[in-house]
Length: 371
Image: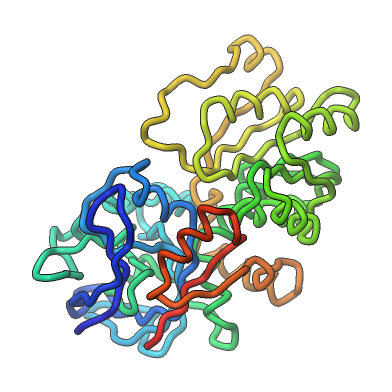
């Protein structure tokens, strides 16, 4: 079948909205009609060349839609089901899934190879094989996707909102609750409050933090953070560090969560200095591939003050479980999702959405697909 999709042919480059060919689903795969897709900073990494991957590529990794067709062997999904696409699949059987760490599922090894695990492609453009970004390609009207990459969700909630659960919300909320292990009464720094950071602010608030300090150079984002659970907001980390030390007898924050789009070694070092003894720096944003190794941290301070630096992939969430938990929190009014969406775009305006993201005009932009 044919579908309209945003394709990247070269990096650095711009998206082209073109017609692509979609194969029929094979074993344990489904054909999904995407309704909506969020635009995440990770979608920019290949546009600006800061990350490398197989090209041409159909982009997008934060989406939700409706099952149109199921292939042989699919269990638990049927046509008409509403689903959120998880950008990391969960096989349920590998050592990581068995430990409840499905965000580290071994199927993740296939995400940036190009073809599907069987060595074949499911999407094509102008007779050429087309890589599906993270094997889901939510910037296409239709896609063939593994059942392992989908989470069935209730049908009474808008997919235009639930699409955010495919990456940004879980990444942010989980970075606070799972990675930073925020506890009641903690002082928490969240650096960078776009879609992921704003969700980290909410996660820290949900976990009972006494002080949630948002750090972002953009006034619009700082003001929004204060509406969504932040208690204080500053334009830069130096100001925020001075403040948190002033309210903690000079000790600093229990945790600092780095949610900017491309964190640097310097960012991590500054966050390390901002946390208290026994504190944790969580690196959530994905650094550019060109960022050299070497975090400016004194090892004596690392051991002597028992500080921790840890990475967080998808907020250390288990998507099949946590996406449904986040829906329950949304229903209860405890997790704000609609408020994260600044503007909606048509697929044809995908590059306008990109420009708005780069300029910092949105918390989250959402692409709405026409069927």
